[in-house]
Image 1: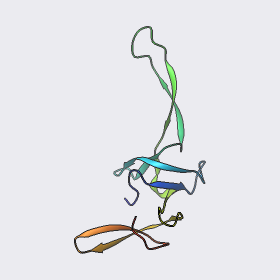
Image 2: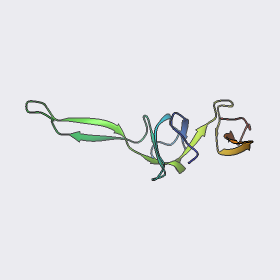
Image 3: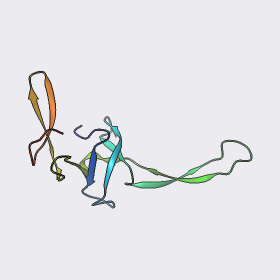
Length: 101
C-alpha cells in the first residue's frame, strides 16, 4: 500500500470529499486507512463498572485507500505516489514534482 501512517492525505470522494487529515492507522490486509477527523461515527459504549454511566463516543471509521491522495510535503499538492529504486533502497516519489516523500 502506498499510503502509510502519519501521511497527510486529501479525501477525493465520498461524504468527506475535500477534507484533509493525518493517517492514524494503515490496515494493509483490508486496503483501508483511518484518518483523523474523517468518516467519524458515533459508538455507544456500555458502562464498564456498576455506578458508571454509558456514553456515546465519536471515533473515526476506516475508509478505502482509493478514496485518498497523499499531500506532497514539498509541493503541497495532492498527487499519486510512485516508487524509485536506487541501489538497495526503495523510495516513495511524488508524481507531480518528482521529489522523495
